[in-house]
Length: 290
Image (tube, rainbow, N blue to C red):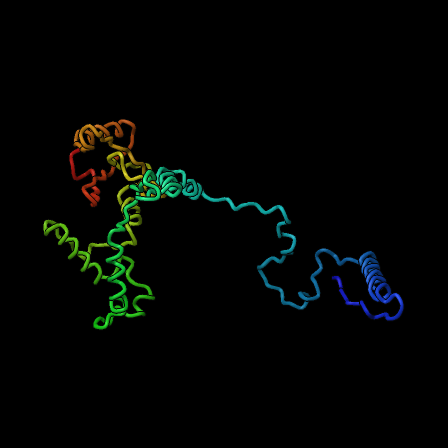
């Protein structure tokens, strides 16, 4: 242990700066060096004075934690799993490559008419002004409902059912039935709400297939599927190529061809992902004779 004492100004008179500062400090350092050379070190296994009076804990081995600390320069990054390594490399996918290109050269009708238009992201900016106007007028009333006591601050800030509030499910079922013009009925008890399409697609992928299984997906397809479906589930995507010569139409013959080729390679196809407008249909292969 080192003791640092401010000695400047103790000795006064001529040469006070030297006598009152440099010489006392030099004597102090020589004194510390003398103590260090002549101090007898305690045995390595002897307990210190602060722990000598502590009761012994049976069954718990006692060792010196100071010796187990890593030295400077010996700390290495913690090893991660192969799953985490694959996720860390996900930024190399076509989804993020296109995103970076768009950020570097975004389209603008006047300042950059030759820029890149982002078609790989589904965001409806045309309705943002309507949503902003509605929130400004109804936010407090919609969250803290004047007539509905269940939507209180306690209900918003505490845990709720993992699958979503039943009131919201009922509204969603009615909305989707209206969108589908009554051709499809929706049971609120069978609806699971997620924070966006990405977790819904990933959760559905975990439920439908095992690692090593595959989905058929018409190509070209949304590059985010490589992240949403493949990244953590271990599921493969087999593209069903559609051509511009026939307006990218998908045929049963094309699905059968890719299905049979995958079967020859020993790959089990569990689902085909079909698109119509903005709706995604996941068609289990057991429902059709493919």
